[in-house]
Image (cartoon, rainbow, N blue to C red; front, side, top):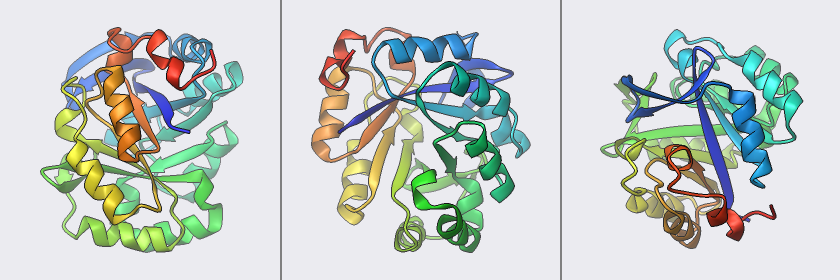
Length: 241
């Protein structure tokens, strides 16, 4: 079933949204992330994407306390990304209630380590996050570009058992201009065995319908929820609320 995954991006304990990852273009949408998570659960959603934006800059976990609080307050399936650097971080997040831990830069910069971690911890608990700008993989909070071939890297991870990829089209993120369908079409064509989760640009129900028809396994939605462009009524196709 196609998964609608709302996002709460965390800065200093608040749920915010940025435009194209620009920290100077911040809008606060959820001053209390736990209350917002409960709202999503009441809407019939089953998943939640927590992004530790502070952690992407400090390169360490900053909001594991929010993860634990949301886990205690809801029955949502939680994934957590940002600031994750080693096996100890992953094990801590899983113990605090994460169903999946999302890794981007740490995996791309240390692919052999990530392959071993996939095999040690299990692919069902790990997600690779790829953030794409101008067909290039971006790292470290979108501040630098990956020097190697992205598709070859993904092939290595897929052969090691990777199951799920969260793919963000950076130029669409927070802009409400629609997803980068060409990007996801190519990704699914190259790696149909992977579960592709689209992120960036979703602005209306039709975007979700089109992503599902394309073959994506789900979509992360943030600003469109918070600004009322996608409503609870729009979700009836995918929820039982």
